[in-house]
Image (cartoon, rainbow, N blue to C red; front, side, top):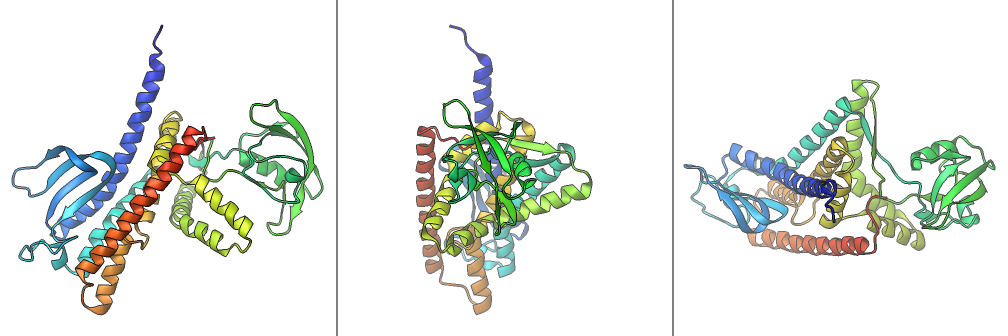
Length: 381
């Protein structure tokens, strides 16, 4: 029995990409906190990547800070004097002895570093390789009642391979062809359903008054990609505009998703949107699976994915949810308005409850990730 070393190398490379990406994103965030804490004179006892028992630690002579690598790689922290407990009030480097402005700088620095990293990667890729875009498969995730595909008997999960004899590379290719048609124009589709042989369907496109465009009446799978493609930028300004647009989109995408669900009055449609969000979200296991798949697509795709994760981590941590950096900023704002700090025990309790809630959420999403993988429902399609 021969050993296929290429397969072994592929798996080793994929594992390396997963560990490096998680480690790098965490390192960047915590490095922001660490550097700013040192800059404003806060005593830093530990700079750690991961949680749980220590695997490795290093301490320079004359430096109070201990640098540690811990066994659970999904996280990290900077342990500062007085940040989560009163600490030594006689220590001039006590976190709580610093001004509100200085503490706010330390808290926000981690998120800023994530943004700087993500934006730098987008600019680097944009100027050297091109503008990246996710390849969304032309697969049916939801069907719109009374529209062509639903009327023709197309089912959720079906994939459109060709339109009028033209092979479809992704959902964008499909949109370009359909957008060029008028209300009532025919579209000859080649459909793939599971393991069955492709079959033909002829439909008449329908003009949608809401979107002001002709439609087939379906939406592709949210959050699922078939890979990335890169197109050369026409000018440096286009790279800058692309980077700014992507950064804003990633920053506010959670707000748009929540607003879309909350504002939906139809309970059935609201449930469909919630299901799409559930299918499009991923925890550590799902992200690891995505990174493994991306590792097969080349360095530009890996860096492009890293840029997205970095910006999303920065945006997520700025949310005013207990346990996150955004929540700590809220408490500092309250302190500034009241001209006195919130009771440390009460604030600590709020952060602790938030942290527990986040752990529960991560466990829930991780279980969902595992079930999707068990049922062979890939995050990339």
